[in-house]
Length: 627
Image (cartoon, rainbow, N blue to C red):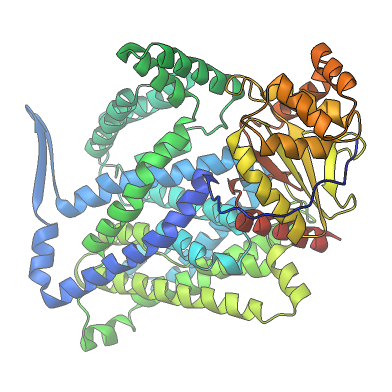
């Protein structure tokens, strides 16, 4: 059932309401927090070079937590490194798990290549460090050259994001999480002097209790907080650095889209509270609303701003201080420790990541390939040379005195060099001819298709060009105010981008919009008389007037056979047609409106005109490359 014609496409909207994934918020926050992190590192350098004794006095001050005869005493630097940083790695793990469950990596074959690339980057960087330090006592500090700094790397990626495709973010997130996992395991195995196995067993048992509690549906935050804190203390008592716990907790916390059944249950609970606003029903409604959202998203939203704007900068302030003078620089830049770390990161990471990705692509005969072009992979490899957080952590465990200072200088030098290399790769790529530049950035990997029911021009309602390279599908509800606000955006999109096909599918949210179902049936009754789009536009323009008498008035206004139209509504003749769209929405995991798909791929994020235009243009570029 086609309908390319409609009312004139005009009008603009200033609406910019966001429907965002935590990953997008994470990346945007990292762009801002990268500046805070850099400022904290510079402040540490200034502080230690103005008054080194006060810097060390502050961070070596002991702080104790005691309950009766049980207690822990550590200096402030250790509380930051092992305690607060566990929350940072929790957020990193949450973002990686979400990408694994519902993001780019939900197709498991897409995990293999970035995982191997991450390992390749680490091996190459460590190999370069060993080449400088072979046969020396400093060879034991090889772990310093391993791990990319997640906050700096994703911050840099967000800052240069306009020069690289969006899909590089998921690829790089996997690479840096692999770095973090392996580096934290290395800390536990190679930089832990003694292990108390009794305490370690207790820590493992307490940790296992957390995913079990998630599996059986326990929703009490205090229970998880108690288990997490107890696990942290047990791991600290065992002698293993407990910072590893945060990443492990994030990786076991599942992420799922909100199910329509859970949303309907939450609506019922809120309705009960609205009718009888008691404290008991308020708690029940609050619990119902929380249960509709995955624990992964709840935790990421709660902790990510704290980790980005407070914890990681505090870590930099506590660890980045290096006394710099002429004699130190002359000695350090001839030191195998400094050179091994700096060159390992600046050269080893991009060579290892890009080379491994290329080798895997060749050996798999293209079955496994990067989700982006080779210029973007090289840019991501350069970004991976930003080693800071875990590197400083391992350096503080592996070295002391002058060697520690040399290691810190190598880490800071690597960060500056990797940033410069990233900019260079982006700039050189931008100078390529347009077609070569697009291929170098976008690549030829196939798109993930989220739309379970493909568009059928003979059945679906569409407007625009039937043979357009880009198809936008919207699941909408005629009574949904956000669908009404999105409509001018869609009109402008169709007016501005000629080679586009727009498809409307029904998803009436009957639990919150009592007239949505009859409105959807009214549009189909109009479609039976060749006037779907005319009725579609009237319904969205008059969302507060969707009673049967209003619908009959719209039919008369459009010059339809009103008697036939009202009879179709009375007999619910179009119920089955609307139900087909609802079933396809369920198969595609759609629970709310409006939900957009661009060339079969679900669009997460804002759906203002600027964001949707970028998504459509990206899809058009990928379609052009594919042909």
